[in-house]
Image (tube, rainbow, N blue to C red; front, side):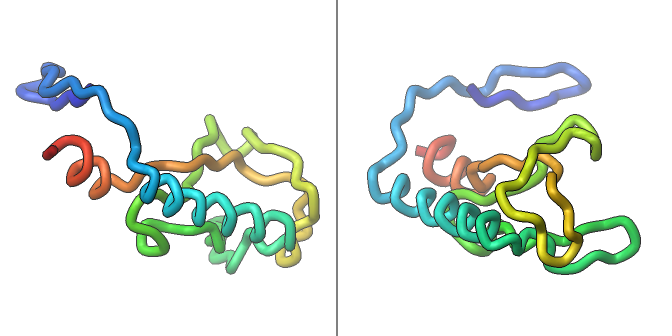
Length: 112
């Protein structure tokens, strides 16, 4: 379902039943595999500037279909890591999840 705000009112714009093409599933799987590798090697955090941690997780430029980004209630909403992060030595990390890229949703689902 696609909604859009119009004058502070949420309007239903489109409803569509959709199945992801197999080729796109394989692309999204690359993001999962890369994320799994990063976590298992303990290389989540790339750098820390102030209190902001920058990760090695796949971003939107890594893949045309999906990426990884935070999805926690707050900084305390964490999950135990199988391997300590090498840079921060953290044994747990803020919850993240997989997202479809907004351009993918627009071009492959909404506009078709």
